[in-house]
Length: 90
Image (tube, rainbow, N blue to C red; front, side):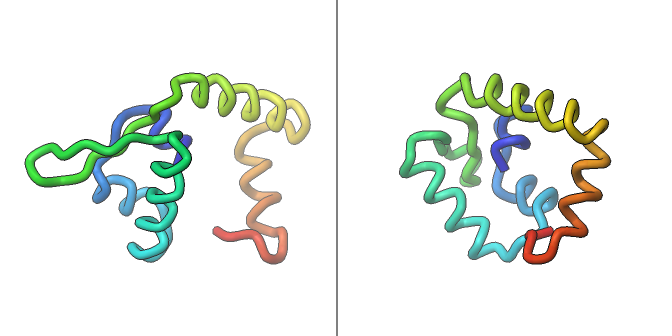
């Protein structure tokens, strides 16, 4: 979710389209991120739109991608490895 929000502020329906999870789980995750101060919420035409509250999260995510791609060879390889790991959410 933070990866998506690092690209652009997103309305809830866009997050739901991109993340395979139950709406209630998505809502809970957003509430945790909001209460921790990592994301903010605003209303736009009656819809909740979320964005990063801490711009440095983008840098952290970029560093993590860089480290992981160096270790696995490519982001696609990492995704393949994670999808084969038992107990890893997809």
